[in-house]
Length: 274
Ligand SMILES: Nc1nc(=O)c2c([nH]1)NC[C@@H]1CN(c3ccc(C(=O)N[C@@H](CCC(=O)O)C(=O)O)cc3)CN21
Ligand SMILES: CC(C)C(=O)C(=O)O
Ligand SMILES: [Mg+2]
Image (cartoon, rainbow, N blue to C red; front, top):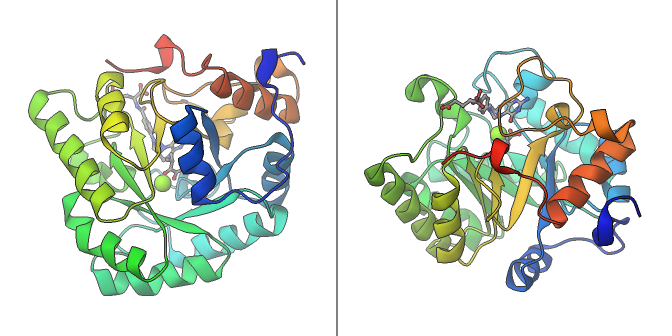
């Protein structure tokens, strides 16, 4: 057991939103990886990765675009199907692409397609304007992961991939959005590139589990993009870590990421914003 007392093992039972709520209550961190294909999904199951995100980051990490804006429903469906074929235990979350959930009705139609491709939950970027949409999907049996802070589909509006919530007004707005979407029935919340103090406050203020990326160690879970874990990214974000270097091979890198999150070693100070 090279990484301490919490060496990850293969998932035995399917992970559900109830599993994740219980883990939040027990203070046990869960692992999320953004990945896109069947063999990686299978390896994640063996490593005990509780949640798989089929991220629209695939537009950048797989397809060579310079943002996630060009990603289509057809591309998301293709990759959700592949991931689902490789893994029958992790909870699979599918990103809804840019402008496929602009209205509640449009969101319902497109979320249905992602669910029927094999996802157990959809993820949407945005704040208070999504309240009706989250409520509508939830009431009809589609669990929703909200995504606040640095929302990459807003890159053209944000003027770049920048840390969000640094001033008090913006921080309060993100906190209020999180509380509202929690009340509307969201089941998970991704917090991306926000100061760790803000992520800590939000995690304490909402009933849904939070998943951080560049949001410090106090979230209920962490997510990284598989390309960053494996050192495939030319200019990796500051919050990410190449686990392949120390681990030596791909299964080892995934195991080390999982073990380091479970034991609180990752993220360290150098991966966080304040
Ligand atoms: N490989 C990869 N990893 C990701 O985490 C990721 C993607 N691609 N594509 C979709 C979005 C885009 N993301 C990004 C991309 C760049 C930064 C970045 O360079 N951030 C600066 C911080 C800038 C500031 O201080 O405001 C950094 O230094 O990390 C952050 C998130 C996160 N997502
Ligand atoms: C970075 C994560 C949270 C994501 O949304 C993605 O991989 O698309
Ligand atoms: Mg995404």
